[in-house]
Image 1 (cartoon, rainbow, N blue to C red):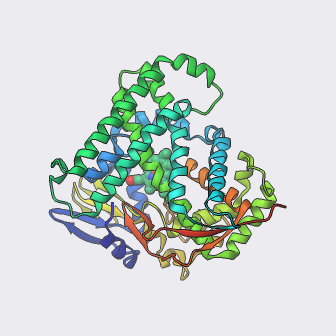
Image 2: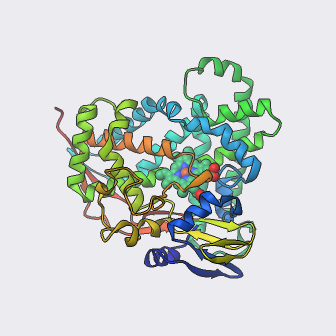
Image 3: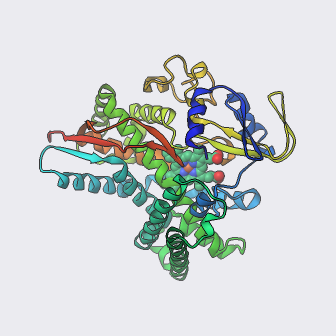
Length: 439
Ligand code: HEM
């Protein structure tokens, strides 16, 4: 996880390879796409994930994000079917319903045709709902209550994350820590209860929901029924990991894309024309419509390039290795600066810092001089398992908004991308939405 200071040097030194010392730990920043490909794909067996910051660890749990070796491979195999496109497409109607409900609530904020909305908060709530459906399926209501607790815990962790780290401070019984411990206990207790309930009723639920989408909870319970290697504790940890990995990332993507479309009205018009052509002016987009939204895909890619929610990732060498002529001793940390790579002018051209979705018109592989130049979801075997879900939700949400509203930045908007675990707009994202006339 990169700090605010690192964010600045990462952008300034795009393309460079350099060392930073963190106390006794040396961290090598690697921005060369050929070397990045080596770390993530051709020589990935020599590198491993590092342990998260203790505050992050408490939130992300011991799930896919941090597991290693056989246990990681086993869990990834069990969970993967949740994210297959065919399975996700079954979620389209419920996601669309959540979006239209959100827009109806916007209408109640103001009686006039215009309404100012701080979109980042609304997109977080929306994403929470979508992830709850993906994770818990038929146990949606119970899952929602649990994820509400986890959202509270994330707020406490975010406050602590902004303070100077005093080693061991998280073990002191401060008010914040005591609240956080209570929440943690409550989350675990509720999840365990939910797993047990779902287990007991699993035969009935399977029968009733045989044709519904596969959810994380159901797949993990099924795996735990047939293998002792998957325990209730594992299921609890995966649920935590899921919520942590998916919520802020997807809502940040939606927030940045809405800001960019508000800043660049001609792209907003083009995106709307495409949505109206493909989906009509009020119909809910279908799973087949979503695939046809090429302009929106280009816009989302450009948003992920300029403002990747995850600005960097870190690996550690498991042995002495050679990397691009450098001898890397075992235990060296390697920081992959996704944000800097996405802004590197030698790869993206002189307009690297500008919003130009057209660069993606011939697909991701042809957008830059190097095809490993665009890695918002990581690369290789540990690539993001939730990327199809994130893109599907983002496309559906933006398509439905574009059908119904035109929008611009509120005068109070201040452009200040900042890092607090992820890349987000420091002063929020106030946007003015104007209702389009009914055709
Ligand atoms: C715009 C949205 C998202 C972005 C930008 C994003 C970004 C990433 C990145 C960069 C990684 C790789 C980290 C590394 O290599 O160290 C990753 C991994 C992961 N992501 Fe996402 N993510 C997004 C949405 C989601 C969603 C919606 C979910 C689940 C609901 C999810 C779950 C995960 C998990 C479980 C991993 C770990 C995979 C593994 O190691 O096997 N992500 N994500």
